[in-house]
Length: 294
Image 1 (cartoon, rainbow, N blue to C red):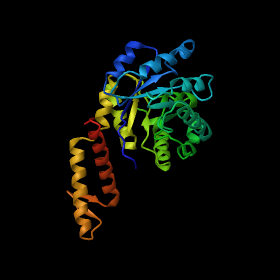
Image 2: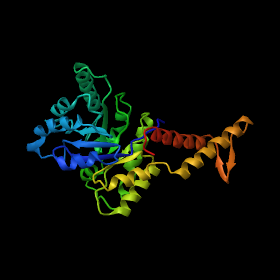
Image 3: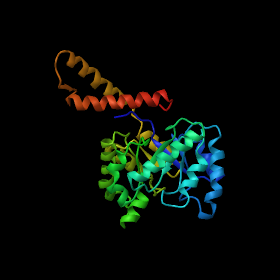
């Protein structure tokens, strides 16, 4: 499994100057400038130029843009307007088929080529947020495109299925598990989880982060600045976790030299799967450290 360092993706309306400036000054790993739900229909076309100008500014975080969905009249124009050397990734909402993601990949490749950019350099992060998207998710994950990771969107998913989006989010467990499973099946990075809409419920948000980390997600999309430090903290290996992982890896390496492939470390059974998980934690911590995030 690939090491990863994308814990927080903070949404901000592409046409709201004050919110954009605040978002870019936070410690989010990526800021998503929104052209979709946060922008009124009458403002969508004009916001493209604003977003392109924002991307050209100096920043410490990755710059992503959520375009409008593939089946809307705005998607093609959105992508055409924002593809420059300043764009790190496109967030593609409501993705429902492998054919659609291949089409967007093809469009990006041609725009990159025409504009003298490295072909494949701009990421696509699809959001799976409809019943059809979930049914087709394994085909999407194995479509052979530039997609590095999937994201899950709980708002549109629960709306599409007529579900109640509860504070405890128990109803999302099956689909979250499928997103993680499909990502692994497709050889992708661990996925990114949905936003959390109960902005004032801080304990519930912490619990949501811890739950999806345990399920195998690498981070969350955020809709409020207060959610960024909590998400970063939960999805960053602690010093204790790193020390424990080092202990497991080192003890197992010594045992393996002696021809032993299963041992106990402080009463904890350790074999190859456990060592692999510990090494994965160390790889992620190393990447975060190299990027100056811990």
